[in-house]
Length: 140
Image (cartoon, rainbow, N blue to C red; front, side, top):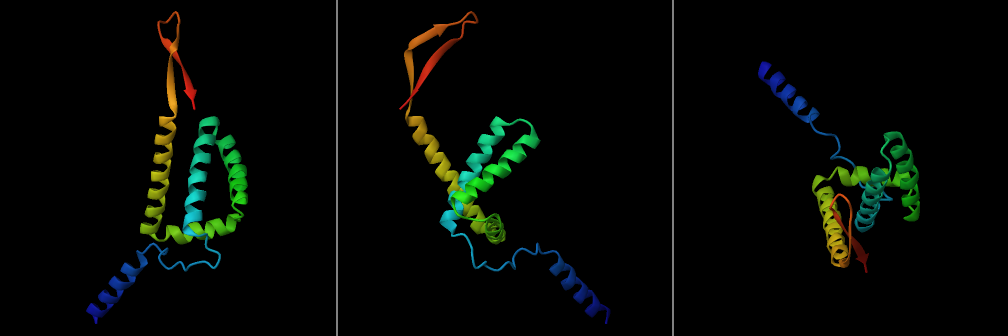
């Protein structure tokens, strides 16, 4: 009898250790994967820009909320729909990892492209008292 109780306790304890997220069913209004990638990429860029601009956390949070809402409105996605879709994709670790890998690859590709279009104009040096030279950057 003790073995049965111990086995039942073990299975109950083992089942209680799950994250509870794996059972999230696919929402009817799930944001398609390709759109989700675009939204999360734009959200990452937006967050980086705002974080660089606002040092104070309270200003950052206020601005991020307003700007995030505008970004979602641009995709015609409600905040609730975005949350449901994030919960769904987030409950599937491999899928979410794939989404973030795609975003990172896209951002890296764009950074390389931008880097190719930046040329240094070495004909216009200015010497300062500190001895540091400055170069004018031309972006084509």
